[in-house]
Length: 256
Length: 277
Image: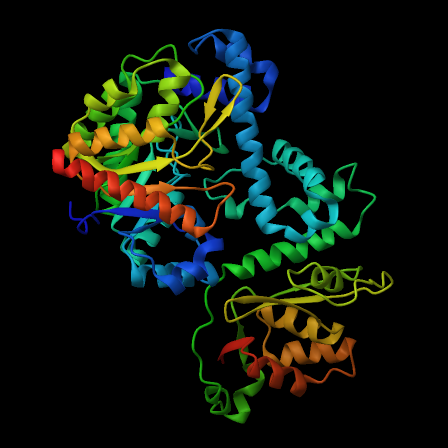
C-alpha cells in the first residue's frame, strides 16, 4: 500500500477508535502521551462537526431532548453511520432509523417520526425555487385531456405520515412561537411540508388530501389519483384542494 | 487561466446570523467569504442570500470538504457541485486546504494533516491540476493548523506549498493564525517561515483567533486575532505588499461590529505597512 494511503488508514482508525492510536503514533512526531491528547482534539472536532450538522437539520429534536443528550446522539449516530460526503448538509438522512433502534431513544417512538418531518423540512429548505408558471396554462388544456394531467408540485414538497401529533410538536418548537404549549398526544397527524417563497411551511394535511398528493407525486394522472383517493375517502373534495394548491403555488406546472 | 481581478483590501466571513445586518448596512468591505459547501443547494433562502451578497460584493468561496489530499480518491461529485457553484456565483477567489478528510469512503469532515513528502506533493500537484482544469481558474490552497506532525515529513509545509504553487500555478492562501498555531504547537519560528515564502504566489491572507487547550493551540476561529498574529500580518504586509485579507470567525459568532472592527484593524496595518514596503 502506498505510504500516504497507509498513513490515512491508520489515522482514520485512530479517529474512530482511541485504542488504535498506538499504530498511528509510530508515524507521528513527539511523545505518544502527547499524541494521544492531540488525537482527542481531532476526535472531538469530528463529533462536533456531526453535532453541528444534525443540529441544523433537526433543531426540534435537539430542543426536545436537550443539547447535551443530542450531542451524545450525534456521536453514536456518527459511529454507526459515518459521514460519506464533504458536504455536511446531506449528513443525517437516516437519523430516523437510528432513533428508532437506539436503546435510549427507543422508548420515545415519536422521535423517529419527528425526525422524518424535520428531514423533509431540511430538504425543502434547500430545494430549487419554484419555477414561474402561469396558472392560465391549466385552463387552456382541453376538457378531453384533463384526465391525463400530471401535476408538477413545487420542489421540496413532501407528505410525512405519522401516528403522533408531529405537526403540533414541530409548531410549538418554532422560534418565536408564543401560543399554548399543550399537545394532545392522541392525535395522529400527517404533515404537508412545502416552501412558501423561501420559508419552509409545515401544516396538517387531511388524510384524503395526503392520499391524492402522494399519488400525484408518484406520477399518477389527475384521474387516477382522484379515483384512487375517492375510493378510500368518499368525502374527498378535489376542487377545494386544487384551488388552494394553485393559489398557494404548491402546484407549479402541469403536463398532459 | 483567467480569473476575476482580486479584491484589494479586507473582507469578512458572511455567516447566517449577520445576513440581514450586512444587507441593510452594506459595510465598506473588499469582499465577503462563505464556505462553499453551505451553498451546494438548488435554491431557497441561503442561495438567495448569497445572490444578494454577490450583487453587492465580490465573493470568495472557501471550501472545507473537497479533501484534496485523500490518497484513495478525489470526490468528483463534490468537485462537480463546486463547479456548479463557481459557475453560478462567479467568485473573485476560490480556495481549499492543504489537507485530507476522507479515507475508505468515510468522511471525518475535518481538515487533517498530510505528511509533507514527495509522494504527497506529487498527489497534491495532480489533484490541484485537475481541480484547476475543471474549474477553469486558479485555486488558492491554504496552509493548515495542526495538532500532530508526521514523522515522515521531508520538508516544511511552506516549502511544500511553494513547490505545489511552482508545479501547478496555484496560489497560496496564507493563514497567519494557522502558521502561528503550528509554530507554538511544534516549536518553530513563524516569522522565519513567513520570510521564506514568495509573495507573488500569495493570493489571500486569513486572520483568525484560536483557543488554548492544555499545551495546545486549537484553531477555533472563535476569538479576536491575537497580538503575535497581528505582528505576523504587519510583517507579511511589509514583505508581500497588500493582499486580500479575511477576518475569519466561525464559532461563538460575535456582533457584526466586532468583525468590522477587526477588519478595520487589518486595513490600518496594511495601510501603515504599505508606506514602509
